[in-house]
Structures are given as C-alpha cells and as structure tokens.
Image: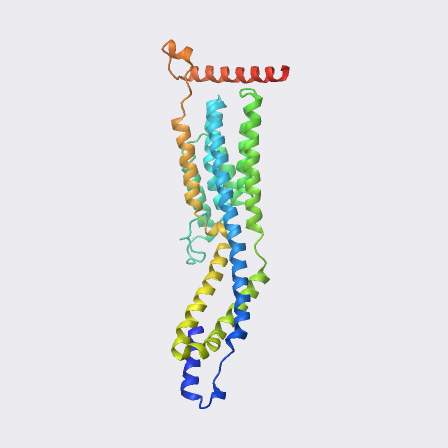
Length: 330
C-alpha cells in the first residue's frame, strides 16, 4: 500500500502537477512529531510483548529445574519400586500435558484447523497426538489408570496439568511411612513450586494485552505509513520518496509485527524442545543414578545392590535425625 501511494504521488507531482501549488506534500517537521509518537508506541508494544515472552521462558526454566529436583529426590528417597516408577512416569508426562494445555496444538503446528469433510475434527486430531505422546511414556500396563485419567480430563476439556499434579500428590501421600517425613515435606515443597509456576503460566495465557491497544496501534500504523511519501517528497524527490517510504514503513511495521507475535509466547517458544529436554533429563537421572557405597560396605567387598542402597538411605536418615536432635539441644 505504501509503495503504491509513493509511486502514484511521484507520478502525479512530476507528470500531472503543473505548478508548485499543485504539488502534494506534508511538512517533514510537522510529520516528525507523529513519527516520534509512532516510534514510542511501537517500542512500548514490543517491550510489553517481550516481557511476556521472557517471563514464560523463565517459567519453563523453573518447571525444568523443579522436575529434575523431584526426579533426583524420587531416586534418592522413595524405597518402593512401584511408587518410584509411577512418580518418574508422571514427571515425564507433566511437560507433555502442560504443552498441550498452553498451546492448543501442543507444538504440532502442521495440524490444520480446517481439513477435509471426511477427516476427523481438529480437536480429535490434537487429542490423538496427545494420547500418542503419553503412550510413549506408558508403554506397559503399569500405572495405566494414570494414563486413562489424564486422557479423560483432557478429552472432557478439564485442566490436565492440575490432574497430573494431583496424581503426583497421591503418589507422595502413599509413600508416607516408607519415606521419612522430612523428605515427604521436601517432595511437597517441590510440588508447590510446580503448581505456582503453572498458575503463573495460566495467568499469562489468559491475560493478553488489551485488544483496544492492538487495534489503535494498527490503525495509527496504517495512516502513518500511507502518509510517509507525502513527508519524504520535498526532501528526497520522486525516486527517493519511493524507496525511503518503503524502507521506513517496513522497518517500523516489522517492530509492530514482532510485538504481535511475542504477545502470545506459548506459540513462539520452542516448547516441544523443552518437553523433550525434560523427558531426557528424567531418563538420565533414572538410568544413571547410583547410590554412594558406604566405606564399611566397600571394605567387605559389597556392591551398590538394592539392599545396600536401602541401608544407605536408612543410615542417611538416621544421621539427619541425629543432627536435628543435636541442633535442638544445642
């Protein structure tokens, strides 16, 4: 649009206008004030949108750290193998569920919203991808009830991440009696941390920038860019007006476009890569975790067997209780 107006203006002023009074132009000095206001408005829009983007990136970093801590604590303190396996699966499932909750396509941007009439609906195709990713975690029938609960809540339009947090809480609650109360509290604190980050993510998701601000900025950009050729003509001439108007309009409106994209950070952030990274981190902690062998066990030629690991956990718990007792009496 700006290019067409610039070319038309140059043609009129050079070929049609016969007197200086007939030349169409705007005073560059007067137009400079409007340009300054537009620049400030575009910069404010970009700053606000980038703040949302940066905030959500930090949320995912906190989620990553909390899940790693929970996976490490699960391997350290949970003695029951079934509880341990269930908790690790839930930790792997949480970023997948969170991704589909914050992004309507779950990061599968190649899924079209409107397909052929004989194809499944958009919601059904997204739900199929959701189930497929969960099925990669629940590869056997163990803890299959958790899988069905997450699938049912998602299909019914419920809050699936909250359901996963509930399942984690149930797992931690069932470990009471086999895990020291101190460590149960540590589990719960990490779970609260995950819940707080999830709530903050929902706040950003459901509270966008005011639509009136977006519409007003777009309208001002439209009128300003179309008026650019009239301000440039007296200083740059017919040829310079075309190129200067196009470049200036592209530069400023690109800032506006970037701000519009960053306004919805969960559609811009590489959340699938984040989910895959968390999945790999939990797998690594699960596969590579090896309890430290006490010197007394090593002296007898013992190895880091299950019995020795349990003995180590009991010894560590005894030392923690002893230290707390000494601190109270001291």
